[in-house]
Image (cartoon, rainbow, N blue to C red; front, side, top):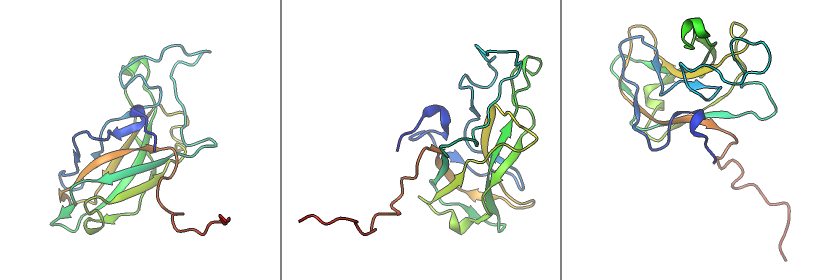
Length: 182
């Protein structure tokens, strides 16, 4: 599997991100990905044309990357909390907003996972979906975990969260071969 450091929310081998938060709070997983690559708070360089705010929709195209989230420490809860992983997009506020993300909009989300399903070493996969209509040309992308109001996780970490360019699981490991070696 090939990974690009600019398209990972949590880098491989980095300090795991804790998913413990206050009741009903949305927890951001790792860093914000800047699709321009220069980082939050930096002005776009070298834009051709008369665009004042840069943006690009990563969910459109021939190659469909996939999001992979690796669980480190198992999730626990004392309040029957469930976790729903969300892919969110935001536009660039431009020079007037110091090139910060504007309002975040959820593009896609997983089903709500019970804490028991978020065991140590579990892997959650999501598709990268197109940006929602509210953000036709986003610059920033983040990954979050939402828990219902009045509930929270008491333990749990994410050790990796990033884009994978192709599935690397063993779905065809035991598929019959279509040839015979004599």
